[in-house]
Length: 118
Image (tube, rainbow, N blue to C red; front, top):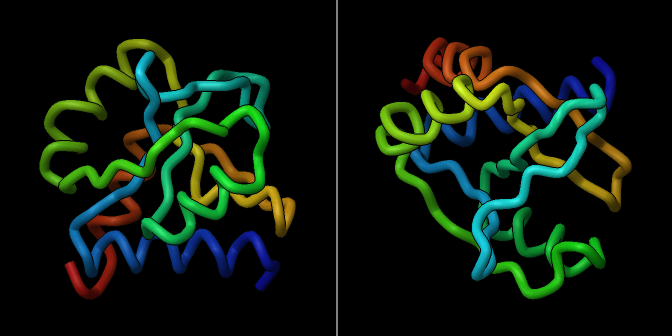
């Protein structure tokens, strides 16, 4: 398995276990920069620590704060809006490890919900 495959599998498993997904937010809202597929992507992490690391290491994320989002809130409120707006979901972005993967919000939901601990 490649590094990115290991990270992505861990992301889905951790969210399934905690029922929480993490993002970052500032006074303007959630970021949605152009991601690896050339489309806008909202970044998400499987833990507060990972979100904080990204804030600390990415200059454009300075001033952002980690935000915990309950899984049911994500699937019922955020996911439909992301789909409507054509946004992808960034999976455990890591500037340190140079890991970046963007998936559709529906794919994210499906992968989390098929995890054994769900």
